[in-house]
Each structure stands twice: as structure tokens, then as C-alpha cells.
Image (cartoon, rainbow, N blue to C red; front, side):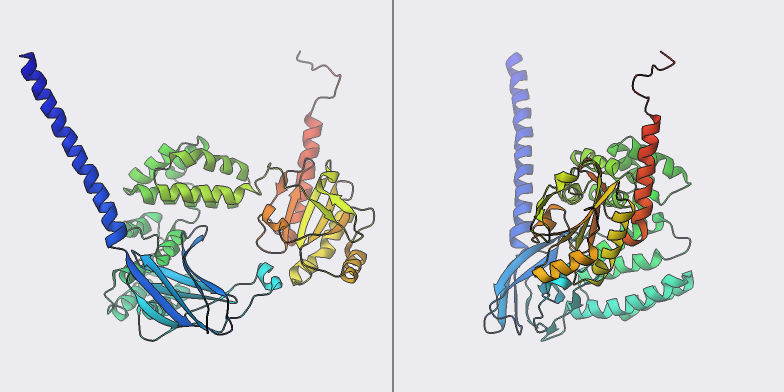
Length: 492
């Protein structure tokens, strides 16, 4: 009897084991089919002038929050021609950074196309570091009509209706716009284009005065999550911008605040799943990551939100969202408040070495500047005035990262260096900008008395003096609240 029972249990185990092996093999086969068979080779050839000997990169966007990109292929320019060849398994928005221009177009798996790029125009250092400079986005010329031309035509019409209804939106006008876009652009049977149009229409519906996130979310749930579709990211950022604060004064706000304060990812995930009926876990995690990103840059308690990001990172189940949040953490970590600033030793106009550590005990205003950028040069006088006004508490360091002659350095020091040595002009290579994650000039940072970041990402002209005075007042209040040394507290 025991032997019979043993055989039955063994057969049951073997049956379960075989089913598991079948499932594993099926999953592996699906992954192989998805990445190998459905991926098709794309070929992009073309012509570009003034770029002989340069290497062009064909890129695509990885996400629409940090706007990271990845390189799909590279090609050297020889005899004014180039050729890219790569594998692709879904339609992507592709771009080529061509100096002054960013050339955008769309490619589907298996596409072979020939394009004409505008003549290559170089970007000088002043343009590269100017925060107001933007590459001019253009589309290449094609030999024949394709998906890119259809999307451009649709975007032109969509932009007209969106700008028209964004000022005084009303339901009838928005409904008419949606009907026109549906009827005028119904010829193309491309699935990617159909989804592109649907994502754009969500932005129109979101303009309605009495629109709520529920309406937009219900429209989102009808569509697949297409991370390679720029229209998905436009609609996603439009609808979920500052999502955690969209319910101020409502019952949902209580639960959202509690989930944030208690650093409870499971509670936030449950709110999105059961209150808004979002079943897709990737969609829920994208909303959380986007909301954390917005909270960090809109909240005075950025250090708290930064810790929140770090604590929630292991809770994310999807590889894509986990990598996205990890990249967000890396980006904000460099200039995170309470983090110590990267040390440096730089020469001044007289060749004397100045160390950042020399100013421990004072607040330090770092001004990464350029004489070639009007806003930066204009603010040099303002930096000097603040250094002279708050000289007992503040030292200002103007750091130039461009090559200057001795005569230029002398002229700048004569005009902008303050007496008393509390406003100095220093000169460095552009490599120093990486240590502070500076992408554009001018860039300003305030360090506290211990060399840690006290202010980052602030409007210098409009806000610095007010913020600095508040910091000094808060510091003074803290000193007054401390018991004097040697005085016994009365409650002991």
C-alpha cells in the first residue's frame, strides 16, 4: 500500500515538473521570437555637407522624464555620405545631433530610407553652455512620403487646435477638434500612428475645465504603454504632472500624503490600483517615479524626497522603472542638499592657488560663469554686490571655464573682484563642470559653512538674496534656542 501511494506521489511530482519545464521553454521561446524574429534590419543612408570626416550617431529616446537617449548606430561621413545599419523590433522616434540641428524622423522595423540632412553647422562653446540655446529641430528630406511626413502633418494640425483651446477651452470646441483630427488623418493604417493620434487626443481632453485625472486615466487604459512613442510621454507628462498634489482638499489627498510620509510604496501602489483601477503594474510604477521626480524639484524638502527615492527603489518590480529611478537618483545625488561639494584648487588671476576648503566657516556662493553669455556677464556685478553686502558671512567665487588671456583676466578682476578677498575670480578647465553636474551657464550653488550644498537650482537674480537672508535668520534662531554653556536647565 505504501509503495502504491509512493508511486502515485512520484507520478504527480513528475507531471508537475514536466508542466513547469514546458512553461519555461515556452517563455524562452517567446523571448527568442520577440527579440530575434520580430526584430528587423533597418538601413538609413543619406547625404550631408560640411561634415567630412565626422562621425554621426543615430539615437533614440529611452524615456520622456529624464530624456535620456541611447545610440542605435554610428557612421563616419565619407564623400558627404553616411550609412547606418541596425536591428529594430518596434517603431521609434530617431534623431541625429548634427551640430546646430537635431534631425528627427520615425523608423519602423525593416525600413530602408535615403535622407538629405541640412548642411552641418558647428556649435561654439558659448552656444553649448548657454541655458537658452536650443538645437533647431528639423526633419530630413525623403525621397518618398512616409510615416514621418504623416506625423509632421498631424502635429501641425494638433498644435493649432491645442494652442487655440488652451487659452479658453470649452467642450464643444475640443470635441470639434477631435472629430476633425479623426476624419482628416484616418488614411494611414499604421498601428504606431493610430496610437500616436490617440495619445495626442488625451492631451486635448485634458484641457477641459472640469477634467479630472479619472477621465485621462480611463483613456490611457484603452491604449498600450508604448515607451518608444514620444506621444505617449507627452500625454503622460501632461496628465500626471505633479500627480500627487492634484487632489488637494479631496479625500484622496489624505491617503496619498500618508503613503508618502510613511514611505509606504505598497499603499501608494494600492491607491493607484484600486482607486483609479490601474491594473498594469508598469503604468502604476511609472506614475510613482514621475511623481517622485516632480516632488523633488517642486518641494523644499528635497532631501526627504531624495531619501524616499532611495527607499522606494528596491520596491519597484519592473526593470525599466527601477533603472529609470536609479538614473534619477544619480542625477540629483551630485547636488543633493547636505551632500558635500566636490573639492577643488584653482588659480586666480595672479596665479595664486585658491582651495575651496579655505572658506570653511563661511557660506560660499559658487558662480560658474562665462563672459560670452550675456546673462552670466550681467550677473557678475550682482555677485560682487552680494559679496560686499554680506561680506562677514559670505564669500563669492566666480569660476570661468573658458580660455582667457592674461589681459582679459586682469580686466575682469579689476571690474568684478571685491575688496577684502570675499569675491574672487578663478579659472578652470571645463572638466570641473562634471563634478557639479553643470549643463548650462551660468550656474549657481550656495554651500553652507561646512562645505555642503545649501541651495541648488534656484533663480539667482530673483531669489538668491531672499533665500540667503532666510538661511541666516534660521541659523540665528537656532543659536538663540540653544542653552548657554554652564547654565543649568531649570527642569533638572
